[in-house]
Amino acid sequence: MPYEHTVDGRVWRFADLRTLLGRASPPRSGDVLAGIAADSPDERMAARMALAELPLRRLLEEPVIPCETDEVSRLIHDGHDAAAFAPIAHLTVGDFRDWLLSARADEGTLADLRAGLTPEMAAAVSKLMRSQDLVAVARKCRVVSRFRNTLGLPGTLATRLQPNHPADDVRGVLAAVLDGLLYGCGDAVIGVNPVSDDMETLARLLHALDDVVTRFEIPTQTCVLAHVTSQLEALRAGLPVDLVFQSVAGTQAANRSFGVSLSLLADARAAAIERARGTLGNQVMYFETGQGSALSADAHHGVDQQTCEARAYAVARAFDPLICNTVVGFIGPEYLHDGKQIIRAGLEDHFCGKLLGLPIGCDVCHTNHAEADGDDMDALMTLLAVAGVTFLIGVPGADDVMLGYQSLSFHDVLYLRETLGLRRAPEFDAWLSRVGLADDAGRLLPVPERHPLLALPT
Image (cartoon, rainbow, N blue to C red; front, side, top):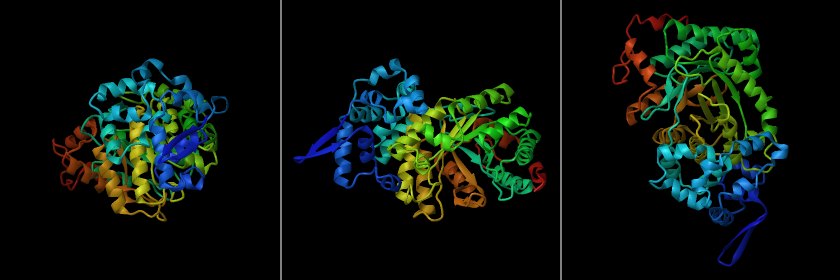
């Protein structure tokens, strides 16, 4: 059905809900590329005003992608909890924004609401919010997850230690692992993106990472971020797989382009749970997402990239992950052109993920041909840390030598922890203290000359 809003006597009309959501989105190059973005600031504001007046119920009644043709839409529809939604069912999108910012929306209330929210609701309300609104509400959301340690507790910031190597060389990978551990990083996961997906490479990297964690009794988890089918094969072969990783998107067609389906993800999760390698919990999945993935696969169905991204969180949420992160600037300037767009997208993704109940983190990053730099990344990582982000990704020197993009460095995370008084996962913090790398307050100590970690074969 069409939507409209009148401003100073001019009637702005939007053909359907997809059009309204697209026109109301903050500017981003991907939506312009797809022909979804507003043509002018006036049209964008008119769309936001029309969206503010839209009843939340309408986002249930008018799927942006029909359930008959999309399994993600069916997942969203079938998983919606009407009882959880009931307390806010009478609100408009604008009213919902005001409610989220009020004292009534506290940690417990927001947790109770999760099952009643759809990704489209989260995306819609985010389009009406300023950056500070996205930070304030996300900070009130608490999502805790467990495998070998506890992530998401108040006052903590975890990290994925990303020790990629352009030749999958184990010595090079372990050199980066050592670097990260000495900076107190790696409590979310020690996770390698392999160049090759073959089983020999997968086995070599899995055994190397597992040996480090086992030998030094590090309370963390490891992951080799191969395709889920390769990880499933590794599980069946008895290899030491902790977390099962997969990139996911917000439409069935986009996930098909990744070579995955909901049933395949369910099979992989069941296989990993059966191995029972966790000590504190059995949340065995790790997902990555990113605005623009559906558009790059020509699988967005006319839906704006931020709403597609929020729909990816419905996929991730269905499989109870230990961690999930958006790689916010990784796809390139065709989708997020500059630092301002990357910062806004990162805050939106974190807000929507937290609101929907995900233990969500962020790869604060950009490609070398984007109009962004280290100052933009400093701003985004600081805003996310204030907003209570579950974890961030760190690589040696902020330069991923395998994937060829700019992320955060280990000392960037150290800055956040020291400046904002944030701790690591408590079990990981206790380990650092026990092995003499940090004091009881979590502050790093000089590394002893003959520390056992220095014996890693780097």
